[in-house]
Length: 99
Image (cartoon, rainbow, N blue to C red; front, side):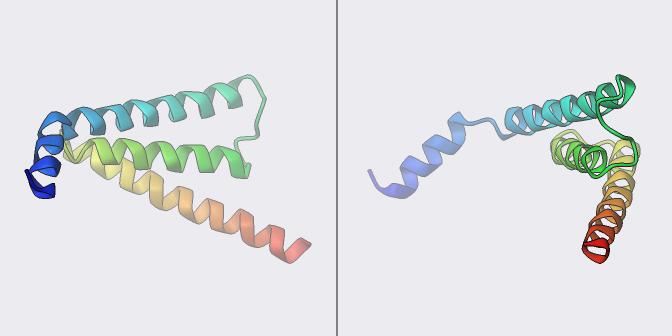
């Protein structure tokens, strides 16, 4: 038995779709955490943490869409990732300038 057959057998036992769905559920949890924290005023909706959580959530949901594709959902996640990245960059650049 060679290394390739071991890797092939391992790949067969790991269902990539199940892993991607798990990552998507993790993204859902990040979305819910960020909005819950904002709702109960634990974080600021204009703050860095909010945008980091949302960008990570969108990325995780987008990963899950590689297995169960939905164009509308993919477009939403891509826009959230883009906006979140811009917001994070803006906030980080302000920190550098003001320090």
